[in-house]
Amino acid sequence: MILSVDNIKFSYKSREVLKGVTFKVKRGEVASILGENGSGKSTLLKCINKILKPKIGSIFIEKYNINELNSKELSKKIAYVPQKSNANYITVFDAVLLGRKPYIKFDVSDEDIKVVEEVLKLMELEDIAFRYINELSGGELQRVVIARALAQEPRVLLLDEPTNNLDLRYQLKILKLIREITKIKNIATIMVMHDINLALRFSDKFLFMKDGIIYYEGEKNSITPEIIEEVYGIKVYIGYYNNTPVVIPI
Ligand SMILES: Nc1ncnc2c1ncn2[C@@H]1O[C@H](COP(=O)(O)OP(=O)(O)OP(=O)(O)O)[C@@H](O)[C@H]1O
Image (cartoon, rainbow, N blue to C red; front, side):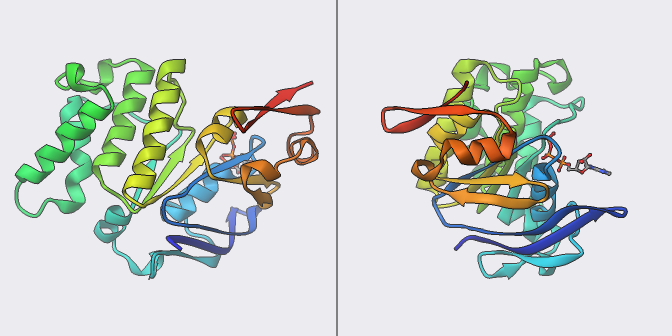
């Protein structure tokens, strides 16, 4: 097991948003977190990344309790792509190089540059490597932020709506790439997704959140119209294309 989340409870002031969340993700696995707006998905990712501190429960990455890792150690283990990113006045290259920060001792090494160049290529960012990120389109910026997370070479990759702002070609390309990297590097990816069909196509495991708990957890062929109906309150038909379920609202 690479990530174990055990009975996490979190409240914003007096309002409890996570009411006991428990799940595990294995090496090489892509898990999608789905569920209605406000059900606690982003809050859960922020707890795993220690941006928020749950009042109860524990989170382990490999054998480490995240509470016992300092921020540098944590950044080698977890990379996080938030739902919205801010663009500073730095170049694409430097923004991706920031992902290497946990590894840089005194100066940037050849290895750091090599990793950044590889990631820029993978994300098709080479041509805009020296543009300033505050001048990029929403989709270009999203690719830069994902590139920075990959340059971090984490054991667990957390993505909050990674396809935000991406056009159809990049939605497919980036999710395929993330899936491949997860398998090749034997890491775990946990992503919050709203597009259930993209999630079904590119993930191994599904966590449906409702009212601050994981209402249903399972593999793709176990998902029924009844589960979707309970989670989202809509009627759906589930067909199949290339052995992958396709959810059609009716
Ligand atoms: N900083 C905050 N202070 C107070 N309440 C918050 C804060 N951030 C989120 N909330 C509330 O916590 C609940 C869960 O929010 P969260 O962002 O985790 O939901 P989500 O499932 O990711 O939603 P969405 O699908 O809309 O992105 C919501 O009701 C939200 O209004």
